Length: 410
Ligand code: CTP
Image 1 (cartoon, rainbow, N blue to C red):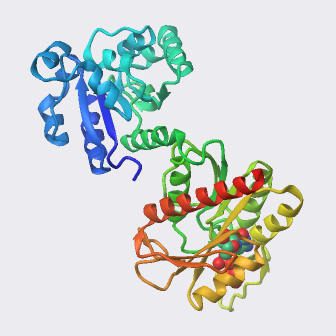
Image 2 (image 1 turned 45 degrees about the vertical axis):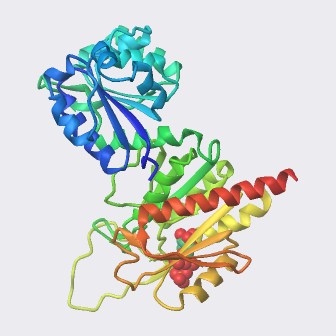
Image 3 (image 1 turned 30 degrees about the vertical axis):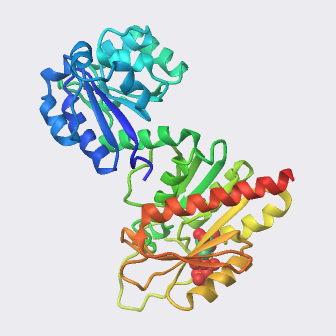
């Protein structure tokens, strides 16, 4: 949602990765952004301006002087209107120009004149990137507050493998979202999110698990990051790709998750406990693969720690986290069970959903949740995309955080 209605200037410079900027432009448009493309002369050798114009439904700017003649815009207009400027791919040459304040084409002039945040996604030959001149220029730009994403390590156009590949388009989008959210309501707030379903090993090849896909937790991570928070994710196994711009720790079992949460709590302002944590683990773990036999196999299970209950105990002494949000996936008595968990785990908010509904719960993109607060307030939300549920939760929690601070300062 954060890209919706935002004015993005997309700069494209002359490298083979310029063809990927076409996909980036398309994804930005799909996310609701208004995209003005500026291409350098060299970029037009790799992709046709018409392609970008067709996708963005807006004129593509190429030449500073042609633009001045044909429209009433000056090169300053694009720089003033932009919410964010993204240059992808940015070549070593353009990086050098920007580091030295050159303004010899429409793109560099626009960037020199802007007060909007600038996000650069470098792509070049590995030796060019490793060159001390490029490295120094990149450092200079970082020190001046430019945001830089990548480059990635991988196969380059030359056939060699090294650092210099444009990062995935999805990552550029995530970096743009984080850049736009840098002044959001949770700036300076440290958020811890747990996500995914823990796995409790039975032997080296089997485990007891659950159906959590991790989608809700990862959506909360993205929404917290896009609200300006410093986010740490403790993730049980999922099939999802690592979110951009957050610190991530991977765990497998409930005990490992408990350990990581305990370590992080003293530095946590808000905890979202979205993980589906196993309540039991096999009492005994075989060191080699269990072989089948004729006899029935009985499993004996022992309890795992209840992470939220132990957080509630520590909160009393540490005063951290300031806010704790729990989740409840239920099949029966949704409200009653969620209320009981809210009280037992001393939560500030519980987000409950009925996982028997086909469109709400496991392995789907949507969720229908009920939010319950300790004062008894119950808020039922309609069926929404998980990303939207996460954004709404973050908005609500940011308000709760602000209220808490106002009370503290009163
Ligand atoms: N939770 C936790 N540690 C556990 C189990 C759950 O911290 N060992 C957290 C979950 O991350 C969630 C909340 O507690 O935020 C509720 O989880 P849920 O599994 O619904 O509750 P349980 O207390 O395990 O109750 P039950 O399984 O009996 O419904």
